[in-house]
Length: 352
Image 1 (cartoon, rainbow, N blue to C red):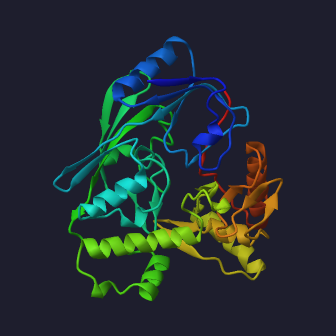
Image 2: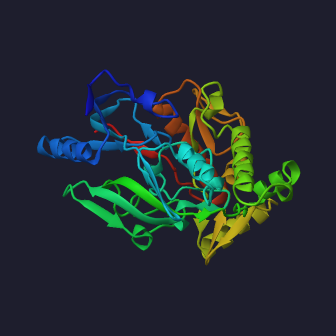
């Protein structure tokens, strides 16, 4: 177990948005036993614990974290027929690439997403028409209260749009240690999302490629190029990638709220894009932001909106306080204009 005490680990070094003060303790756990030891130590000494993966979806306070930041560093990938199990500390995009290299289809549309594999079930990560919750067959975790190992079936995970029991009812109760996916050996790529289909139709002739791996790899490369074009791939040389990716989730409105929203749009002579989501309606957060007067590249006190993606808030030399003030300014303006409340997607790790 590698322990760095207060002042030796700036949390801004551990996140893609590069914000946050120092951790009182920073511990990298390379095994389940080390995780359990750390949890027991924290419990015995009444110390708060924050669990960190790849740092792509978390914002630490300017004051840092007055407790233990536990980085999950478990490694390993196991193939068993069509079930692929990955340890929580594996880099997500490297895992996706590895599954494709081993001739499995299913995760290609989730290429390029920063972070670790263990974090993906927490918010039911999704992109280009695919969500991990639809592919997961099981999750192993450690109960932070009892220190026991537990296993969850997909039905027990409570997956919904950008949500799960690990983000909702059981937030901070479990530490995920590995995730199992059911993928398709020598399968065809999944292309559901219009933007991806248009890009492929313009740039790639899938029919000229061999079935299976060759086509899946081509879709992965298309997804990566689209994400690069939006600065949604972490790149030290791209200031617009100093973000948490999408800062807001797309609102899902109940019918009555959707009708009220449409009425406001009619008054403004606007036609919003939306998608039916069961009995409800999913509205584009990016559209709401852009039609509330914000433009790509907007900046306030060093916190800004990406030049390439309206949903990404970027660090242009700001503090955590500045980025959250910009987020609240956007939320209030959208609410005033359309009566819709935007929800922040990243986890806010306050000083404790």
